[in-house]
Length: 304
Image 1 (tube, one colour):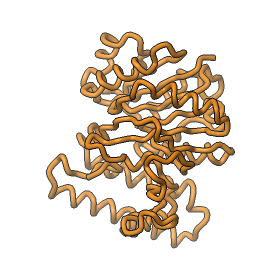
Image 2: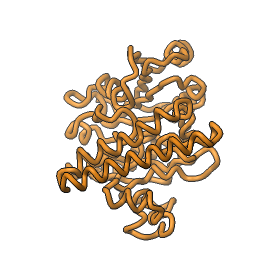
Image 3: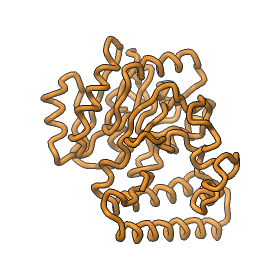
């Protein structure tokens, strides 16, 4: 069994692949690791480019864009998960990220020293140097989502109750247990993944990483935010090409997540109210986008 599989899911991301894969190659140097580049039916020649310029990557070409979970699952299946894993650990990595030289070794060492951690997520910084808030997330319960979208989380970011959506009460440089890290870059213990299975393909885009983290916590593993490793994330660079589709996917994932994890705890009337509010917020975001320049449009969880 090898140490590490890295799954890089690509969809029309050729412009970002050189920096991402160059940084990945550097941090993989000397390690017992394999990189899988999954191309989700790109139309920009990404797969051919990687096969020609990055021959050390194992390229998997999908004939259709089945979504984020679907594409990552192709890579995870190639790595033997969940039934016959060929690797002790697996990293999910977006092509719009850049890893520092020390990233993989530091994260693996921390996981090996803490056998009860199922998922480890680094600190992610956006292109402007600000924190990607999704790298330390709370579970989006109805109450947590309400506090976030009502603005209470912004008014009281240090509150353990109101600030849970992005766990803003956790200092950005504090290693801490969180409800979820983000699929853009997260290291997963192979044993944990084998227990809970692959990503839920009901989620086309967004929400699948929170769902996976929740399932891993439910079988007894910790999910940890690990800021000693800092990764650059050009968030939204690909999804801004299809903003309306991504906004709809983001809010649809909220409904899927609620239906899967919370609906059974509430009355039918309450659940209808939740879905109605989600639809209204989605329509509001779509309307807002019509009056914004392309670079400022909301695209799911990316900053506006």
